[in-house]
Amino acid sequence: MRRRRIALLAALALATPALATASSATVPQAAKRVRSAIPAIEAYRADHGTYAGLTVARIRAYDSSIRGVAIKRAGRNAYCVQSTLAGPLVHYDGPAGPLRHGRCGVRGAVVPRTSPGPPPAQGDAATAQSRVRAAIPAIEAYAADNVGYAGLTLEKIRAWDRGVAGITVAWSTRAAYCIQSTVGSATYHLHGPAHPVASGRCPAAP
Picture (tube, rainbow, N blue to C red):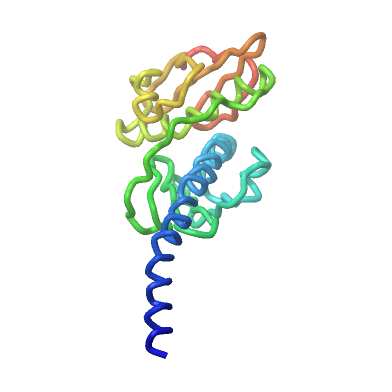
């Protein structure tokens, strides 16, 4: 009996590192799911002027591929989205972030960003819209640190998210900004933070 217990404990000891590794392997997937929800969340805010009322069903109206996340908190100016996959949880306190380990409300370690893979093939219009929306979280993070959007440039946006590309900042003021992207014959712009992504070039600065 004693030998059986010793053998069982030894087997568990050997299995524990493997189990931990398998569990940790879910972190990149969970992080990817949470990050993929951010552009749709910011698109919702651009359309509604607030994060209040945010739900997974509502952000899936912008991107039906969103899975494995839950909205744990949503107010006028901030929100928290959390992974729901089995294994370690990750969350993002928006709009400034960063992505962290643990559930919403826990200040866990920052999840490092991995190098992005090649973007999926899209039409010109879809690509232009996607590029504009992808810049929104970094723009809001800039605004949170600088008490507004004045002085916004692509370089400053990329200081928050190096993955932002293919856009130009047409103008910015303390209260608003406009960015645009042209891909082929398609041009889309965002007059933020209160307007949705729209076809065409930015309007003139106020």
